[in-house]
Length: 322
Ligand code: ADP
Ligand code: TRP
Image 1 (cartoon, rainbow, N blue to C red):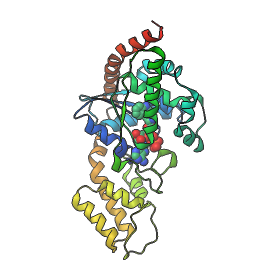
Image 2: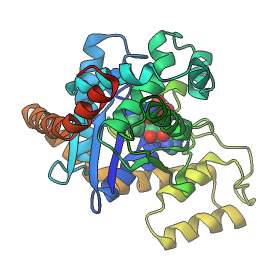
Image 3: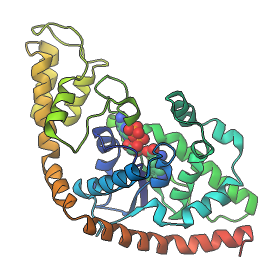
Image 4: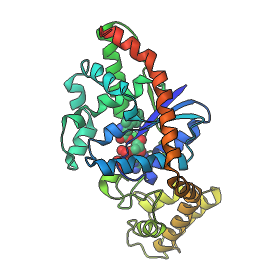
């Protein structure tokens, strides 16, 4: 199986990105041929400040490596280092109907959040289809919010096949982990950079502690049992609980009462440090060696382009450009 996924460097990596995406990447590379990339071209739909984008790309690349993506096992690269991706995007655009893109909920959601409704934002799913199809990935691990984009990718590939009468692409499947499908943010909505409700993986401990202590809760008194339904703190504790015993502890304190939300949040912070402590230390180390990070990305780009070359040749021939 060939696996591919990308993450936009559009903000600091947060625990939603980790549980919804990066953790799966780390596991998948044990068994599959994997391609993981920084979707910097996609990020331009929201980050339009050169200095900031450079910093975000560097930080996300550092984060990928610190969290366990291994350049010996996986191909790790920057989307913009593959000029074939925008080229393929164009060929795909010409077989993509407006209606298909108009049905994409992410465009409407982002515009509702105040993102400029640019042509790039509208065409975002086509660029994503190119990312996926260019290395012939079988499996694409993503959060549930990206499922529609995978369906669109399959539709675009099928329509290319129908137009040109040649099966050049592999139709990919999404891989979505059901139990961690949506990680809640500190306000109880889906954790997302665009809602400003994230808990970051890296960055100063003090700020993170403060974020964790501000997770929304209701006013159930300390001694009373606590509701678990739609309770962001409960969901986060269950997600982070390092073992069965801790997970059982969480169940018990919610069912029986006697522990206040403040103490539960302190426990959540302990879980957080237990989960990310090592990665946070590696991150600081790698920050001191940006040349190493660059070297890994350059090597990844070379390998990804080697994989893309024969497919691109086939596509150019199919459309009559060669
Ligand atoms: P954001 O919503 O913060 O902008 P991205 O859209 O960049 O995050 O998401 C990067 C990856 O992380 C995607 O695969 C996405 O599905 C996953 N992801 C983001 N937020 C969450 C969340 N709250 N729960 C689960 N997965 C998430
Ligand atoms: N759209 C994805 C997101 O916002 C990022 C992404 C871009 C991606 N290209 C991809 C994910 C290809 C998987 C495969 O999270």
